[in-house]
Image (cartoon, rainbow, N blue to C red):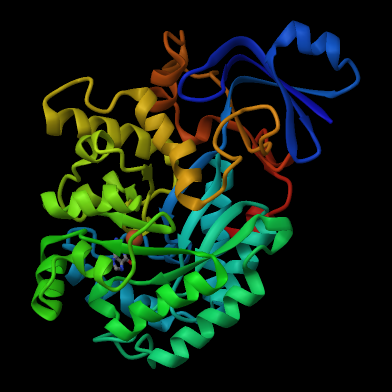
Length: 421
Ligand code: GUN
Ligand code: FE
């Protein structure tokens, strides 16, 4: 039983409370409101004080297992970077390296305030990453990658074997660790998957009621390859094989035309915007304002550490807003509140966690606390601008998931940071 309090409590994109508090009982939020009133009402709760409290951030597209690949081909475009560098790296990784990479990824997420991740693993050793996320204590939607077409040695799989391994992992991990871990069927992208594989992914998702997470329309070479192969534009191809809908999360969606955007909106497909990655790989500027105007749920993701160098979700809020403003030549195009919502509630919606992403009574106690004890932070004129434009992951002083403190004042509670690094 804990009473978290702060000068500023950001509950959601609409509501922020000055001198506020959040009462945590077991894994849930029991109350949110005025600090003095809640101190009176809950005098015996352990008190933890931060400068700012907010919902834990949601990284809605990451690759924890690429955490050891920073600096790989930093100046190449997606397909060369992927096929010449990243895929060979993944193919060469043994189980211990996969675990080490995932541990490092989760360590960084926890200490920079991300409490939920949608994680795209690799073809092999997925168990290692599931155990890493589970041991780290985070909430995660994650899945082994399927690659059964035109893939390098060491990654290329037999279609039925890839689907069978996916089914084994769903049975083993979906709902694990008290429900913090959920499974997402994760075909890598249309370039690496046969039609049979993609249709098989839809069947498994339907059979087990789990989500699908994949990459789509990230780069021009990718959409040209998909069109040459299938005769369809990327999103239309995914729609054709059943991989659009309210249970589907598509990372990137930079190169979509009008008709594809209509499909995304009509089917309720979720999009994860990865602005830093899209800039670093020169993939392009995703039409995020347009998606939001159409009612598409857009979340935020860091993508893999090789295409961003950091898993800090505060960076992604900042980059998303800046890129949106420049794209539209409109300072109100993607304001701080909007990118905050993308990094919290929209991410939880994409991941299918219904009671996550806001500080709200009865919802999961997934909370981040920040210090403003640095020159960037004073004074706070607007809490959303503070979170989107001034705050960094290294301001985080508290990370809590399901009411459990995972990180506080520079110390990890569950993880042995020294051995992971
Ligand atoms: N598309 C298919 N695989 C990948 C990957 O590992 N990273 C990125 N950024 N895009 C991809
Ligand atoms: Fe990615």
